[in-house]
Amino acid sequence: MVSSKVLFLFALSTLALQISAFADSNEKNEENPGLVMNFYKGSCPQAEDIIKEQVKLLYKRHKNTAFSWLRNLFHDCAVESCDASLLLDSTKKELSEKETDRSFGLRNFRYLDTIKEAVERECPQVVSCADILVLSARDGIVALGGPQIPLKTGRRDGRKSRAQILEQYLPDHNESISVVLDRFSSMGINTPGLVALLGAHSVGRTHCVKLVHRLYPEVSPEINPDHVEHMLHKCPDAIPDPKAVQYVRNDRGTPMILDNNYYRNILDNKGLLIVDHLLATDPRTKPYVKKMAKSADYWSKEFSRAITILSENNPLTGTKGEIRKHCSVANKHHSSV
Ligand code: HEM
Ligand SMILES: *[C@@H]1O[C@H](CO)[C@@H](O)[C@H](O)[C@H]1NC(C)=O
Image 1 (cartoon, rainbow, N blue to C red):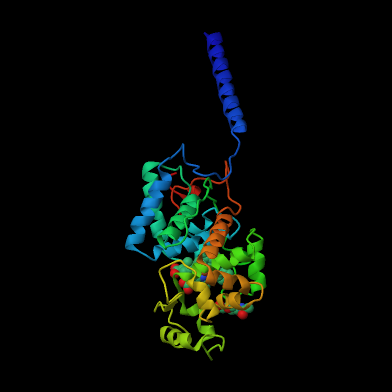
Image 2 (tube, rainbow, N blue to C red):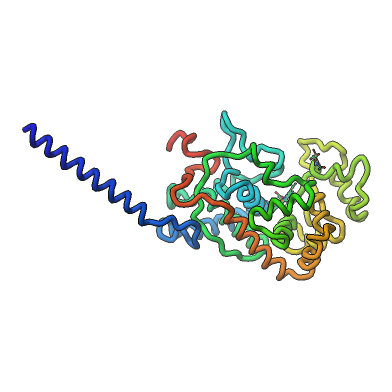
């Protein structure tokens, strides 16, 4: 009796050993593929179609949500890694990236949750928030009339927000071109790539708080006088009322279209941010600004190339990170995981 029990336990433990050895070798043989095209081909073949469909539906209802998807790509990927850390809410211990001054004006996160929910309904906890963030930006760019950019997937979600170090990565609205060039080049994005990416400021808006220092106490002589009147009309107070939501559209010509009109605006001294204005005047960037103002095709090619590099900045892949259940909470803080 005793011996048969021992035998049984022995058999059980060898089985367990075999299973764990199998799992181990499986993991070793299964090389981490990193980022690849159509990463979810086997695990959730409909993922990219669901995202595309949701982007189209949401864009129809809330046009400005596409601006947010595009801006999210910069604010997530440029801060160390494309790991959806941008989407995390503050916890008791940690302030979220979303709540810092550099993130001012970021909006529409709830529509990203809508996309995630649609994906979760089909494939629970398979598709990362980091990939949804990148793919919504890709499809949002198309909705806004920009280029179709094939992008890889396979990113995993980080567990921590990076509010403390965010300013080391994201330039301020009044940053010098030297600093901006440095920050982008450390991600592998060169001068024409940077110039092309700032073409994103061809859509969306800038709040008066980011502009009033160019208008008050006196108007900066660099701004086109034709534009000053409009800016003063939109931003009538030196200290904007934080509750009034006062802003100027980034591109008055084609505010809803992602095109190269931005470059003509900034050459015309109608750039809103100091950094936009500097881009058109600094000898390192001006030649590219001129070229992109002339050729939509050249801008579109450089923009696609730079978006691709940005979207592949230092991702978590393989077994690193996790697949978040809800994009705004790391799984360990989630009550039902
Ligand atoms: C030097 C780099 C950059 C600086 C300093 C910067 C700064 C800003 C600021 C201050 C705003 C206005 C926010 C507001 O008042 O609501 C803004 C808006 C925006 N930025 Fe940037 N940005 C930079 C690069 C980029 C890049 C690389 C992208 C995307 C590829 C991007 C996409 C956008 C978009 C789409 C908006 C409009 C958002 C909306 O209307 O909701 N920006 N940016
Ligand atoms: C940039 O603007 C901020 C306010 O938004 C200000 O605190 C900072 O001193 C300015 N930096 C430079 C270099 O002018």
